[in-house]
Length: 239
Ligand SMILES: Cc1cc2nc3c(=O)[nH]c(=O)nc-3n(C[C@H](O)[C@H](O)[C@H](O)COP(=O)(O)OP(=O)(O)OC[C@H]3O[C@@H](n4cnc5c(N)ncnc54)[C@H](O)[C@@H]3O)c2cc1C
Ligand SMILES: NC(=O)c1ccc[n+]([C@@H]2O[C@H](COP(=O)([O-])OP(=O)(O)OC[C@H]3O[C@@H](n4cnc5c(N)ncnc54)[C@H](OP(=O)(O)O)[C@@H]3O)[C@@H](O)[C@H]2O)c1
Image (cartoon, rainbow, N blue to C red; front, side, top):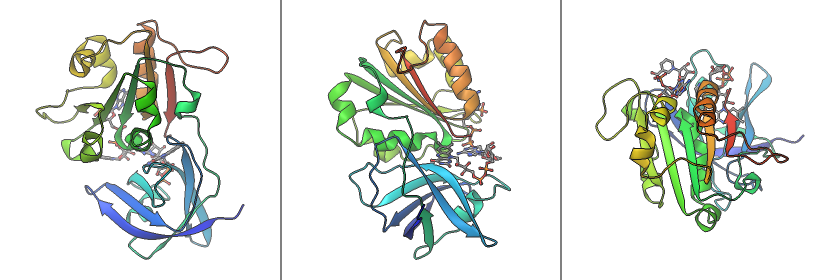
């Protein structure tokens, strides 16, 4: 496999932990919602990790949204990149968190924790979801209000935008976690739309959120979507 050497244009720091890298110089074909491996050379070894595209496929500048995992091999180094530095990008995007894998539904729910919002930012900026679904709800759950990044991107779309802030009080955001708010009706009330078999859920981020949310949706009669047995839930775990 031949790695593509891209050049960092910008590394935006939203908080001490959250950063967005914009790079140019690689022309990649991918579907909104997919990821690609990105890499740096560390101690003479190329260290690679999967990152979802934030940019829609038609945008030639690639964008990745990351969090610094303390003591993580790659993410602290990605956060330190500056304009002009080199980032290696693999030539083969992949992943099934894409609209082409989904059955027809009326409402598309996009549920993310933390950096799990990345693939949904790409999907929301393509035409397909707006042609296919009557309503789209984007839910972003974070620990602290400062981590509600990309608000201005979401607000430029017609998505209903619902936020959760779990570790401090934040007016305008729901408190607690997504599965609890599904069970007690707060999520549907905030979104202004019912959860039923005409819904399709895409979940991305923390694997425990994926598991607990899938369980809460199962209580409502919704199940995982598979090619052979169509359902209502599609997931992508970040770890
Ligand atoms: C399909 C896929 C897509 C991904 N897309 C993204 C993305 O768009 N943005 C992104 O930041 N990461 C994404 N990741 C995670 C990413 O690949 C790395 O794991 C992450 O950047 C940390 O790398 P690391 O080498 O520092 O630590 P690692 O050794 O890779 O991870 C150590 C631990 O950090 C935690 N962790 C990893 N990623 C995250 C995260 N995103 N948020 C919170 N905790 C985390 C987990 O507990 C993990 O076990 C994705 C992973 C997969 C499998
Ligand atoms: N942000 C920080 O202050 C901080 C501090 C230390 C380390 N870190 C590093 O940053 C990473 C965490 O990043 P993050 O804050 O983006 O991700 P996160 O831990 O996945 O938290 C994001 C959101 O997901 C929620 N969540 C967690 N488990 C859930 C579940 N089972 N069901 C539903 N929702 C769930 C969290 O709620 P809860 O708040 O209720 O868990 C929070 O609202 C870790 O790798 C860690 O190393 C961050």
